[in-house]
Length: 152
Image 1 (cartoon, one colour):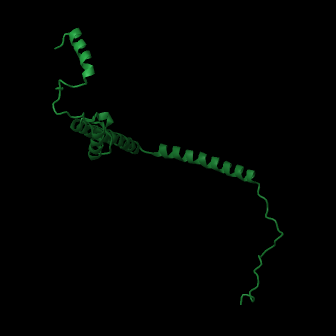
Image 2: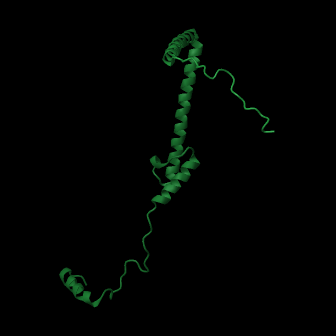
C-alpha cells in the first residue's frame, strides 16, 4: 500500500520569487501614522480635560487626597506596631521589618536570638582560686611579685 501513494508535490510556481518589501519605507510609514495618532490622542486628552466639570475635577482631587491620607494612616499604623514590637522584644525599631505586627514580632524574635551574646563558661566557685595553683617553679615569681607589690 505504501507503493500506491504518490509523492505530494508543492502547488504553485517553484521558480516564482516573492516580491521584495522595502522595510525602511514601511517603517517610515508606520512611524508617521503613530506620530499622527499620538497627536490626536493628546488633543483628545486635552479636550476631555477641558470638558470636565468643576465637580468632576474636585472629585478626582478628593480621591487623590483620600489615597494620600490612607497611605499615611497605613504607615502610621505600621510605625505604631513597630514601636510596640520594639518595646516588647528590645530590638531597635529601625531594625524591625514586616508587613504586619505578627511578621514584625517573628522577625524581632529572630534578631534578638541571633544578637544574644554567648554565655560565659561556668565555674564552681566564681572569684575563688586555689592557693596551690601553678607549679613550684612559679612560686619564686609569685614571692617576688608579693614583695614588690605588697600583696599577701
